Length: 371
Image (cartoon, rainbow, N blue to C red; front, side):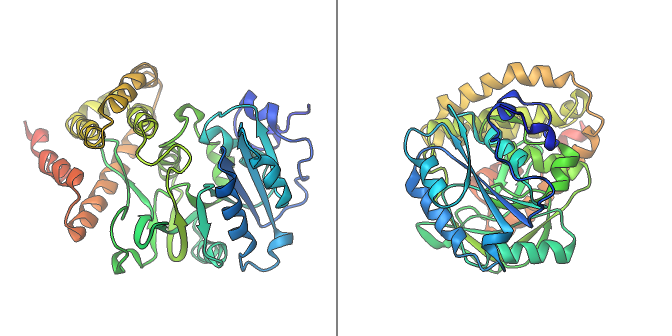
């Protein structure tokens, strides 16, 4: 089988190279948008998202958009179903995780813009058009919309992400009622890869998602890399989608808590050097301790603790790698934390953030810096 990964700057990944299809569209055929959908089982979800793509109002959608489904070793008819909908399908023999599946889709994509889409999302008919219009009009490098919960469409499942110095990511607005607070466009650093549009120059410049994360926080890591490199995105609240959330692994399952707990530690170790970690050690300890408490609250303390333990080896290896942008990363996290504080103040504070800010102090120059 001919390897195609060299067509696209993702870095060498033998898994991606081995399973890229031979029938790739030539790079000379440049479409406006490629849509990448990782999937694992649940053909019912996949059919719903493919049907919502068929209703998109983007001009000449059928001839200007390619749909790439990356099947992560499904044991059902998901791959065959995708082909009946006209999608190009990349088949993995087993589940290699979200990040590697996305990377394979990106490597096979031919378009200027790439929409990364979960298999449990339903898009409003104008979703893609609104993201493209706002991204092109504002000069943004990526864009995402307002994501509502499937079982209560007055409640947010997400919008954009923000991350604290403690390495804990907040899907902004999660679980809160939709309101004016979430209805204005804004510049963002992080777009959750639930239903987000990225210009291919990001991947050409930064490479692909870090497959070492497996699942969860790979998009947070990519957003921080974007911010460190000076790329910016836009939140487009009139682009609306509906998301079930963790439909494949199970919402609030032990696996979700394990991977999230593990990858929070990896995020810190990957982006901050040892002096910077020592500088911010108190918010890191508070943030990670509260993350364990959040796992315990939902009956998954041991899964969360195992995730933290599993991160120690990779994190220690990461600590010794050069990090020329460590200071930039910390400043970005400080700015992000100020934005979390402002939004939480407007909302009345979720329990995690109430405890976090009470224990750390909400200003950068908190009490432990003055000891």
